[in-house]
Image (cartoon, rainbow, N blue to C red; front, top):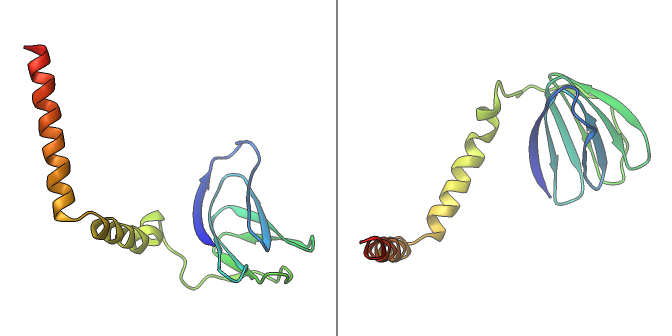
Length: 132
């Protein structure tokens, strides 16, 4: 499960995003596809349109400013207006980026940073001796 937001240029080759419950085909579009742990899929379109199909072969067009949710094993339903449509990429990624930074920060301790800095200093000193 996870989430992906994509900008696809017009006239690019075929581009699809597949999840356990949906397939999305796009061109010239800014959209997000999120698959949850239960196998459901949410498709949000910010610009352009996305042809979306469920696992049963039913398809429909999700247009700019709309979203659709397809449960695992469920059918494509009528897209609805997205009340929380982000204005740009930053509004969608802002909290995710902050969360990722926190995870990275938590993984790198102060001792690790100091050890890595010492390794870089030693490497630089070695390189300087080779040149001199």
